[in-house]
Image 1: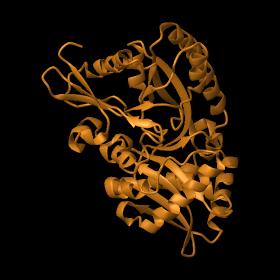
Image 2 (image 1 turned 180 degrees about the vertical axis):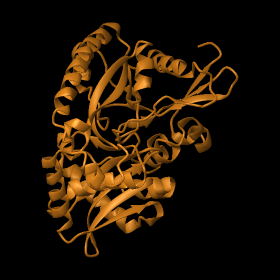
Image 3 (image 1 turned 120 degrees about the vertical axis):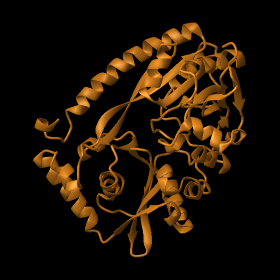
Length: 382
């Protein structure tokens, strides 16, 4: 890459917020300097959690900032939601050293968005140069691999054309077909499914709880304290790790403002459940949720139906409700592909992973077709 320069940064504050965000844009909250700095400043992303920042910046031949990307050295594969532990075991069984690896991602966040953050005035070849630079970093530093996860489809396609291995995943997203109200949305469903959703909402709202949508500065420290308790309870039930620290959540209100959307359920004055969402340019992203007590259909009401209400009210195109959960299909969320791109430095191991991914992509496409048959939408309107 003659005349281009690449730098690695061991913290997001090595780059100013204005410089970073000039490349990241304003549509996706997770790649913003505000979100990434909150992860680092709260101690959620650090050596202790196995996410060591190595953010990448690319300068064009004229010296101007052309691109950045959020990157981390990883000593494990936790908190990524695109699973490569099997690759690690195979490589190490053959005598290789898989970790550390380079992860281009937003930690603990299975939400799709741009990963090669290109400045709007950068030369047109900047994305290709950055993709090649990430490969070169692996070769120059002895890393086994680089992984760009939950990227945009066009990024995966570009990188596949430069030797990276594309990978598909599945999530469940709600798509707004110009609905004017929740009832309008229900009208697109089959009669049986429409009745089921109405019954779930009726039962959830008959439990005597009050529901509130809080944004930005409206979210108090008491709200965040309750939410962190719920978050920790959910992690404990799923045998996971609570990487996000208590201070991370109030930092979100301070730094992202109204892009933070916390939906809470209260029993009198006591908050008993909450769902954390983030507002993008045209998408509401559901992230974490938690609850205390046993309330009928509260998870569906707070995480799915009220997210749809919010999206319709604000004219959003999509709700992305996070990883996993085929039960979302029955609530109007459709199977949607997610994309990743992977560079494996060792040629023979790269060939093996490539063969695996080719089979996996075919299986994923078949699974998506099968899941689509579970759709609650009326067939005459799809």
